[in-house]
Length: 108
Image (cartoon, rainbow, N blue to C red; front, side, top):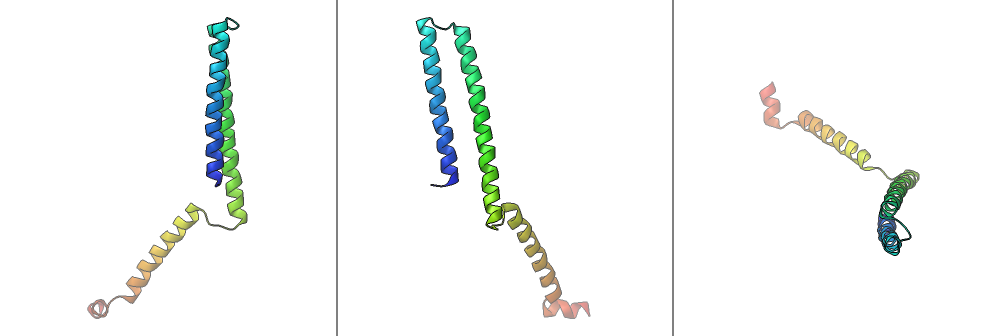
């Protein structure tokens, strides 16, 4: 199971919990133990806290993965893109320097 799978499963579990909380609050409203406005307020507060927790979890996981990749000395996507640009630039320079025999003769 990859880190992505773990994060995805945690988020999906959070959505399931969120639905159960909403159902529980709806039931309390039906029983008259909470007013509709109190129920709506509780759902809103819980949803905001759940969203914040999900965001924090995602940020923490991203930081953790970055640290692990750094310790493993694995290049990032940006590192690879920089290397590819350098390779393309150097290839172009080598081609210009090598030139074809016809190009060399025409320059003389």
